[in-house]
Length: 182
Image (cartoon, rainbow, N blue to C red; front, side, top):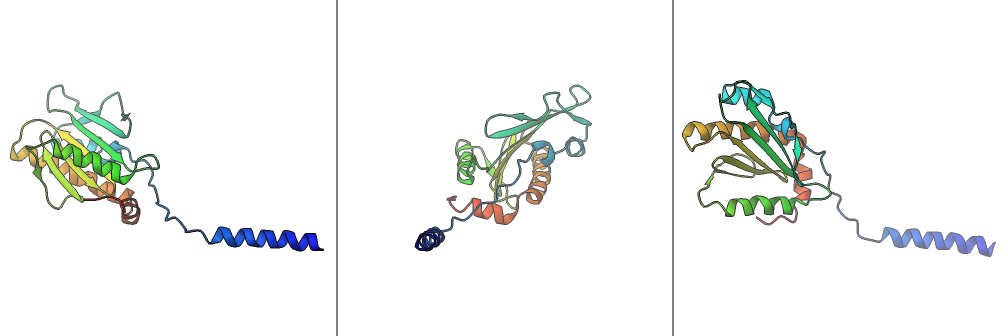
């Protein structure tokens, strides 16, 4: 009987000590978002006004990011549209994604901020760069720095951000971004 009582006390003590530890806030990590979901071939077609299709390479991984490229079905009709996304995950913190975004911005003295798109956004031709919900989205579509080029980049980025915000909850992004310093 003493043996049974001793075992029960040990179990009770173990459970009690284990429950006293600080609970670590869990960060919900969203599923990996593919760039062809953010901007589809149909989106690229609508914004460029030319029939676009994904290259035969499909979606490519380049380490921490995924890329896709759309080209005109009619050779030379318009420049390709490329979409790149780097997102926080179990292996990549939101602060590292922010750091990558910020370092990219700091190297471009010719950039222009875009208000009202994501948490932070700028254009440094030929790219529009958006940081939103722990993700860094980079889109190119053509060349030049005309108003038409700017509008095309902004329209593509608006579509990408709208999709992103359905894929990554604000709560998950806020929890993941607790340590991000802006």
